[in-house]
Amino acid sequence: MSSPEIASLSWGQMKVKGCSMTYKDCKVWPGGSRTWDWRETGTNHSPGVQPADLEEVVKKGVKTVVIGRGMSEALQVPPSTVDYLKKNGIDVLVLQTEKAVEEYNALAAQGIKVGGVFHSTC
Image (cartoon, rainbow, N blue to C red; front, top):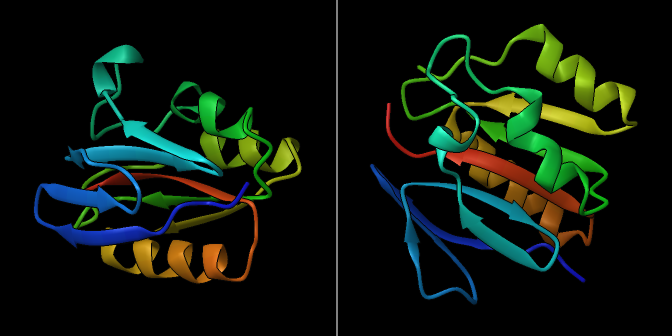
């Protein structure tokens, strides 16, 4: 199963190819996507993305995870989250969201099993 292309990104809106929903924040993985609801794990801009935010994506067998920190990079990514991914043998890219989407789409186009979490506002 391939990772779906992120078809569009603008402030507060993301579209994933093959999905009719418009997301504010989203998780993507080979074969699927869904809303990334921060309330599920108690995530806030600081301390930011937690391993619990990534467990679902990791369980899909990804080789790389791309984390989009927001348009202004307000969303933090603590070292413990990066360490969690590396300990699971997963490459990680932490980028401003527009750059993160570009990298994610490039990896997906190469057939790499890539997943990601993306914050589309601040």
